[in-house]
Image (tube, rainbow, N blue to C red):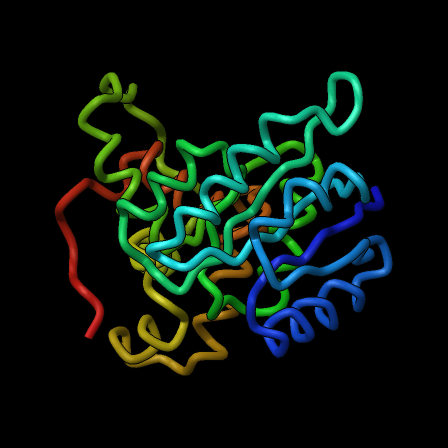
Length: 226
């Protein structure tokens, strides 16, 4: 599918970088860009983008207000533009505020280019995205509220792959996993790729959800990155 994107961030270099990344994907196009979040709702109503990438500072009431206005206004009958918040803050309360405002995603600005493209594709298709390092903590909070999972048979992963998946589910980067397990970063990347393939998962976010749903990871237990 093809999708159009409206970029909103007060830093020109950030917007230029995101534009270059998105336009490298043949099915994505940038409909416009803004430096002021306060103008985003009107511009979204004019350009009718599928996804709005909205840079929001931790203390930005204007940014959250823009999220509410954009998601509350129909793009066309039965269709609303979807918003992905881009933030430099990994605090849980900022994630919660964005989700309450109606955002379909919350990503940290230090993500890799491929993660940005994948996130836009997911949200354009109607899904939601959260940076893996934040998703792990979010699921830890939600896990006590979920009913006990039924016992499941052993999965197709090797012992090493399960070990890597546990660390991915806790938000560890490939570099942190490599250091902890005394492996090369390329080896860790290969393990992650095989995990996604074996489990039929699209990305690291789905891997985090699988790890908690399957009981491989328990809230509050496990090592912490250096």
